Length: 388
Ligand code: GLY
Image (cartoon, rainbow, N blue to C red; front, side, top):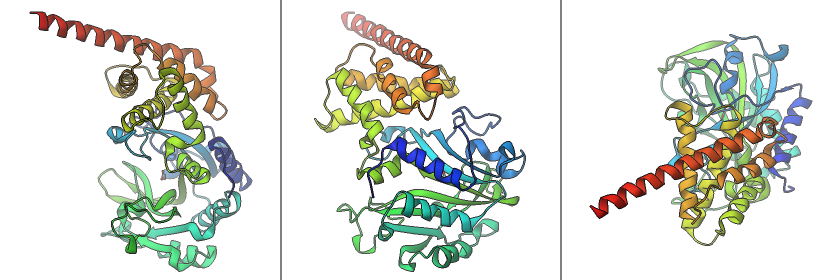
């Protein structure tokens, strides 16, 4: 198992699936196109929904596709910086079948990629399948997937287990969904585990890290958990690029991944704050690092700061990052400089970053100045109140 950079892993994944007949597609914009159910793209499959349902013909007539999709998820924003795994921006690698291959190929290729391309040791890999839960179409256990993993792929039964709907049934809002199999990497015993004797995939501790989700997209959820069978069987997989990079680089935290650490280093160079100096400084450095990644990507996709919708998400992220800059003692705009590092680290995969560089810098600087003016005005009101 060789250490690989985040950009190398992305390329290896996409070219592996190209070699299996998949069309390599550019990441879609973070702004959903024709999908009112989402504010921002939050998974690899979200921009591809019409291909799973059969509403749209497959892209360029190809029933197999592979992408690295830019994603934003903000529900855990308050935890960002305080944990090793939470971030608002992440990249999701995926291979997709729109009514073409199904479970057998998806499982075999995933295993081949993990063991032969990433060279992950087989004894560190664990797989889960859907145990079934509840009534109706979505309630059946996925015995077919169990059989494929055990008998076609050859996974040792002691490394195979069944989990319920929360872990092994994938759906995000309304739309295509289905039972899934997850692949975990065993990082070794976690001293913080509350039940080390029974620790297994699905445990809340950090021992088994889930890095790839293979969804067998057979159903449609109408948004109220009423399931119908889709006209075609599909595959939708999601491998967290940052998670895989943590595994391949032997680091615990997404903030220690090569390209992401380079952003933190730039923040340190500008603010003078050193990573590892204290927990509160580290939290601020991580918040800034995460938020400048998401905001640079959002602006490159045409979002502008505002007081509603996507624009509000962008404004909130930028202002949180600026506030953490203040906590580090920086009183002048600085995020507009850090975004250059984000652009440099990711422009090979996302050429729009370089094309829109001047615009991105301008938007960030203007918002930082507006925020500083708002704070100054607030301070003045407070001081005037104290004098009265
Ligand atoms: N669409 C599968 C995943 O993102 O996990």
